[in-house]
Image (spheres, each protein chain N blue to C red):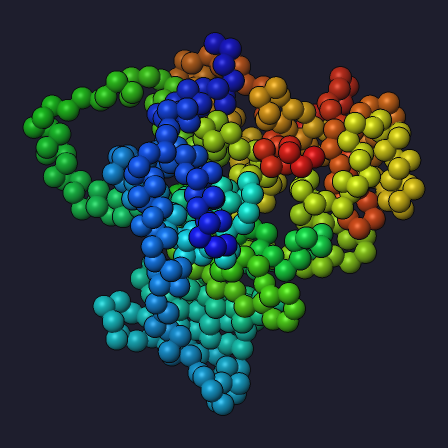
Length: 183
Length: 291
């Protein structure tokens, strides 16, 4: 992939990737770093970046790893500063933000990270099972099972929290954009 | 409340795609990234490479398993090497250099086991377009239900390159981090034998079956066209929404759609069998998740 081809991939994928990262990141500063790091990796490995719709999925998969590394660093930092933050919160009388009062959001945040990941790839990025499998680096069957279980767990916990939601059993697979275009 | 689970999750997004724009910042970032040649930003070679045998003595030494533990750096470096694979562990990352991914899998298993890594290198039959390509890599479903380890470490796998040379050995480099004791898998495609089911059977551009133009035909007409080309059929039940998303699942092998139903998609299942997708209808079998 030469510079012009990379620029074309960048132009097509920049906004979807920015959205993907912003929706999963605590701050816009961190999001900017992660988007920059992801595209830098892509440029470094330009020969391996696939063409067409697959390029965006490759970038999502790379951003996912960059985010995971970022979060690992955050966790280490949070562990170091746990006592200090506790003191500061007590001093400031911090109260939960408005988002914590919304039961759907609260229940969602209490789900396991793996459940939230597949649910948001469907609902926020609009990906199908095969596309998610590409991003996560696992089989379609694994994604179907994870998605089914995640929807079921979310629905169960919503009901336990008093949120009435019908839960039609999720289909085993979804077709993404690339597959629909090709079929 | 009538919202589906996916709608509820969609409503939690803090940023919507239509709110995103590409401004001067995006252009500056692109310019900054491409200002350097790709090879100039490549990471330096890992230190363990210098520890590996080289030159005329390489062949003899490579056949010997080597486990080293040194205190040369701020953190101990552990290495392991046999004829097929070399592994270095430093800090939180294991770097695995596989000399030929198509080599004897027992050598890989031995090496991974030596360092307590739960990694499987799977070679699966694929259609010609996926031969010698890495199909997937990451944590496996069997590890998904494990208790999250203390500290919330997840499994991470990276593979370089994604495509092997067209012939001969297939050298791969894996970088493993996080909870490496949870099962992880790297899946690589190999040429399928005649009739062997492809592990990469989703519809894709360039599928040789597209020339038969099966989409839109009745099942009966599609079967006739397949028979004329020496192909059999299996089925999937699929549906699409106006928004473009969709779903599919595989019914029991004995299930057959009525001959008058329309084919909504088709792709090769093996060199001798095609998959025909039909839209769901009343009375069809329902998906039963397993695992």
